Image (cartoon, rainbow, N blue to C red; front, side, top):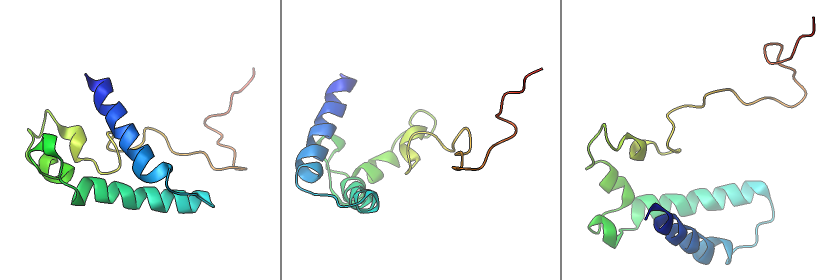
Length: 98
């Protein structure tokens, strides 16, 4: 059943945003997607959520069971590792021979 929900969401994202927008840069795509995400989560009520927005619904859930719904940036509270910077070697991650 979980696959049906994500397929429905993917179809909505594709129909409402991706098929309608010609992106000229990665920055524009990120900004446009962030605006669509804010509208989808904070302004648009959903019938399956009792006509609440996903943000409103997340705060009515059991805090331990549905903790993942509370993170605005995704399901994980913080990244596990830092992002590697191009051109800057990380001495801790390099393999040593010998």
